[in-house]
Image (cartoon, rainbow, N blue to C red; front, top):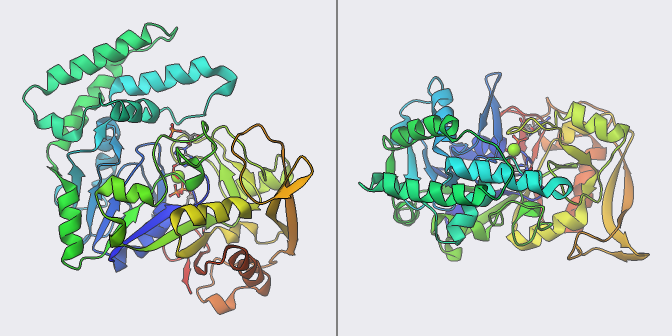
Length: 420
Ligand code: GDP
Ligand code: IMO
Ligand code: MG
């Protein structure tokens, strides 16, 4: 029972990077289990902000082992860029970062296909990060993917060329111009760099470490509402972002899971297309975006902002078996006179609190209004010093969701964290 999972309960960007980094001292190993460079996990300490895409957020702690699991899709070009940026801040990277043989590769043509598919979708586009995620996972489940272990094979170039030719044949059907050679240079530099790292069957390593009593934290990417099965399909990512994804993405049994930490913001954000019942397309939404600096860590796109959605949060909690809740960004709402929380949906005059199957329903959120906290909270480190309005807000969430909030994040810095 010594593998804990930390994952997002909303549409991503809940603050996973910050909290994995803040919790890392309690663990020996940090392991990413799904997603790829679509993720942008920010962490801050010593007044510097770092953004990680593929590399687990435990990397800044010199005594921790970091694992990129089989469930992750890796773009070698992004990997290289990230390693180059990390070098001044993190020593011994080739010793402390291990990559699964079974992690699938994002090829340069996956990125091109992602862009071509999105262009063809026009108004119905998903708003993908254009990192090649959908096409890479498509090849994985279509049993045509290339995996990190393949780069060590003597015939790797033949396999690579066969995949590229297959993709180029598909691209002929799209009116989409691109320059493959531009992508390939960085990609092959990344392949060479990957070979300097330990490429192993990490499922054995993770299980051996767990059996020997090492504490492991599995780091999720994206959020539950972007899960390929349970999110607002097709406006989702292409992996299972829920806790079950940690089992398939690392090769661990459900019996080995201890805590499931679910992170949520005190409000909601979403990047890309798709339903967002509590979205605020008004001044309050702008205020959340500006104060919360809600711009994508991977694409820089402005995030759509809205009130906290409890039916969606409770759904996520159920799907993940969440044992503890971590709340971030309450500091962003400091000064709000009153704060709304969605407790149910009104669909065709009927009040429900289940998420509907399709995306066609017009959902009217049913709100409860609570008084806001008229106080800056970022310097507070003790739960009992939080304003009464905020603890009341937290109790309201706990009562609705029936799971305790055991951590409150009050700013982006590692130190701006209250353990309850
Ligand atoms: P992730 O993808 O879940 O790791 O989240 P992102 O890094 O994409 O987005 C979260 C953003 O909020 C980052 O800019 C963080 O530095 C920042 N952040 C995290 N926790 C807090 C918090 O409690 N308060 C504030 N103001 N910012 C936070
Ligand atoms: P982190 O780990 C927020 C969104 C995209 C798009 C949809 C599909 O930082 O929380 P994809 O590129 O996966 O095909 O895009 O999913 N998306 C994210 N939104 N945070 C993320 O990751 C995301 N990764 C993908 O905006 O709507
Ligand atoms: Mg992010």
